[in-house]
Length: 112
Image (cartoon, rainbow, N blue to C red; front, top):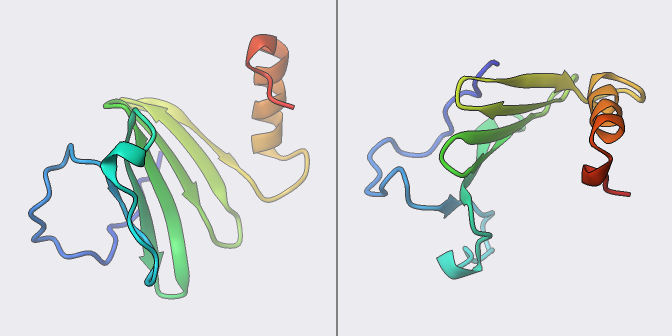
């Protein structure tokens, strides 16, 4: 799985890597740590030259969800060192096929 590029944030941060963080747009207020969902360690927006390149959500210590933008957006889900990436830009494409496979194989996980 290709990792997103580093965001434009300063590399000299005083934050601990385990402390939850949420980047917000100008004018918005950051949520308090108590209002964040349990298990979400961070939600980062990776900005590029033309806007948002990716959104990276770290869920618990070993789980990661990455959504990339561009002409061919992708969704990646990973656990420690393995996972999958699926293109998310056309109907009945890779992401929809993965979702349908999971819905059939694990009907108790379906969301409609």
